[in-house]
Image (cartoon, rainbow, N blue to C red):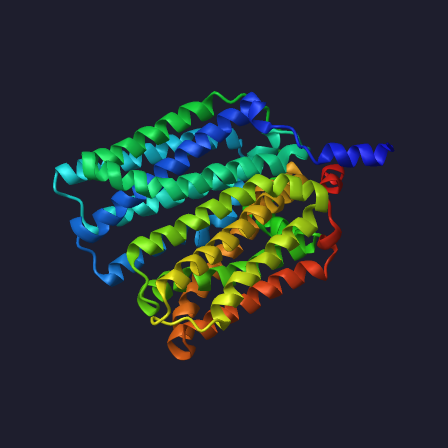
Amino acid sequence: MSNAAAGAAGAVRPAEVLRAPAFALFWSATTLRAFGTAIAGVAFQVLIVTVIGATPMQISVLSALGVVPYLFLGLIIGALMDRWRRQPTLVLTSLGRALVLAAIPVLLLTGTLTFWSLAAVILALGVLSLFADSAAQPLLPHLVPRRSLVMANARLGQSATVAATAGPAIGGLLLTLVGVPLLVLAEAFMLAVSGLLQSRIRVREARAEPRPISRHLGHEIVEGVRYTYRHRTLRPLALSVHTWFLAHSIVTTLFGVFVLRELGVPEWAFGLILAAGGVGGFLGALVAPRIGARLGAGRAILLGRTVTVVPWLAVAVLPLTAATSLAILLPLLAAVQFLYALSQGIEDANEMGYRQAVAPDSLQGRMNSTIRTANRVVFFFGALLAGSLATVFGFSVTIGAAALIFAAAALVILFSPLRTARHDDAHAMA
């Protein structure tokens, strides 16, 4: 066997990253946070709807507060993460979120939980989560070899999918058993344990390069934006994911309303449909490292983008109505969610692994925050656009438009240098 062939064969089986103590602690802390967030999501819904009796407008405001920090602070915090150490940031944000959540039972017991106090809690959690997200992505390349980044992101994706799928069910059960105050305290405890696990990680982060006194944060933000959108392969990757997020915002905004109201699917069946998505996401993350090793980063991401088009195009063109039998709707819509989540599982691990491997450490925070902030802006306006389009043109036409936008995201990669990019090339460039 030639050296090239031997290298290719070895690449098919990436090393198991959970055997690395630092990553095992990071994965445990991240998984615990994911489960805590998913479980507490049930408690927050109860608080919003039944405890404070929020109006539809107030619910919209509370929902937007979770995104607002990314819109206004995303680029700034991303630049700070290229100045600060990321490991202590993750520890402090976990403990900070635990303290903020612990304030909710106090507000409940003292009868001072109102719309405004809950809004302050949600905003504070949003800011702390932004710091945590901005620190976690650039820290990961310090915990595992760059050749193992796809595997590491796949493992994180698998646990996140399980948490998102099982967490609400566990939260609903615990809510019945212990009530809202204890459920929120349980999440606060999980975040505190997460911070403790994170603090046990021993990692040496590169010391930030000295900066001229005249060089302020704005210069560094601009440098990060320029680097991202002038890079030969990161530019098409960023443009593709922005396009994908526009379509994603449309289908995620409309799918529940379309299925429950337009098609009249019962709630229990809707739960099964969403559960199929959890299975698809887990399997996608499971096979992502092997697909990335065989096809290369660019083609693996392209595969995920292409598969995404199929389920939504099917929803748009098939004559689905409230008169359609549930025996047809249930497996069909479950397949839609399964394929959609499967495609995300495949592309997410490869996309994140490639981004983390190709960018230098001094630009990791700014590169990731540039892409993440633009994604949030696109999602915010896409969600608003979705309702307007559905009102004027109907659900099928609007979902069909989203399928075409998903196709455009795939075409950006197909006709760019990213299509032939491989993870090994990114490791060599870094």
